[in-house]
Image (cartoon, rainbow, N blue to C red; front, side):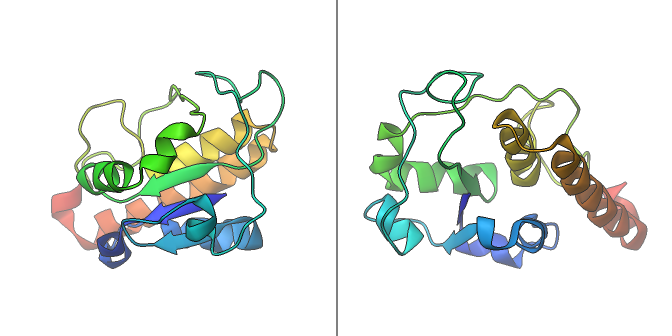
Length: 159
């Protein structure tokens, strides 16, 4: 798992990257910034290969698990900037996820539409779609619900 995080997202109280780092440990590489020359540059090493060819709604290459997943982390505008500044991302296969549950943020953080989900939720769904134990997805979502509830408890405007 490679998480490309916008530098300003690190300052966000409701950022989900710390939960992912704590939960996925060495299975996650976190790269902060807005632009990298290549996948190897973002990873800080070479040897990680992208699966292909990609499809929508299923792992790339049909039923074969993906070799890795890249997620963009930041506000929607920040994630779009990361996408635009890294043209090498367009050459990689994409996995299209259709959330089956409403996003956990609710009113605590503005989303562009009702079907939008956080980076953590997208990563959890992608991992499960790639054959990981559904308990991992459930555990990640539980951690996020706890974080969001604590934010709501401390700031009544976020309810």
